[in-house]
Length: 139
Ligand code: HEC
Image 1 (cartoon, rainbow, N blue to C red):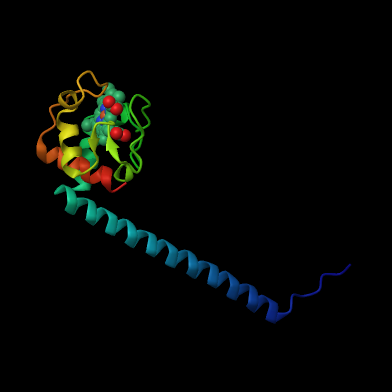
Image 2 (image 1 turned 90 degrees about the vertical axis):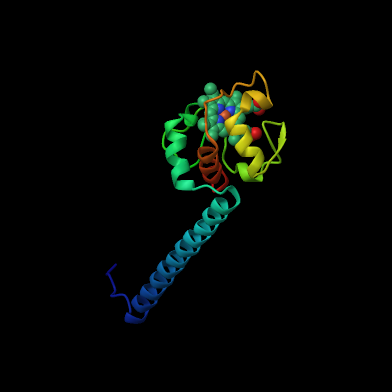
């Protein structure tokens, strides 16, 4: 069997298909990035914090030693609940209706809200609690 040359029209078609796939992928990525940006801006607004500073604080306090935290390298602890998508959770620690104020309170004083809970008091101040909340609600 001999190799027949691919007709030019077919090559153009293949190129066109490849171009469409690439365009779809790029617009998908752009939409994804825009959506992510909106979610982050919203999270900053409702918490009065800054999700980027929150990320640094999550590392500093070693939260990932006890929790799985999305997009935080090495945060794969199994002591406490997975914090992925925490914004859609109804309650925090099964005690408080979930919301920015409750999240702040929980992060600052888990032992006051649920004495004896496995989550320690870490002396987190309000500004840091706002930043951490922003990160958690943005992911
Ligand atoms: C020593 C382990 C430990 C550390 C460190 C820790 N936590 Fe927790 N955390 C827990 C446990 C255990 C719970 C579950 C408490 C409960 O339900 O009573 C919890 C609960 C939570 C919840 C509520 C989750 C839910 O699904 O209701 C949030 C939010 C949270 N932790 C965030 C953090 C953040 C942010 C840090 C770092 C500042 C942190 N935790 C540090 C153990 C820990």
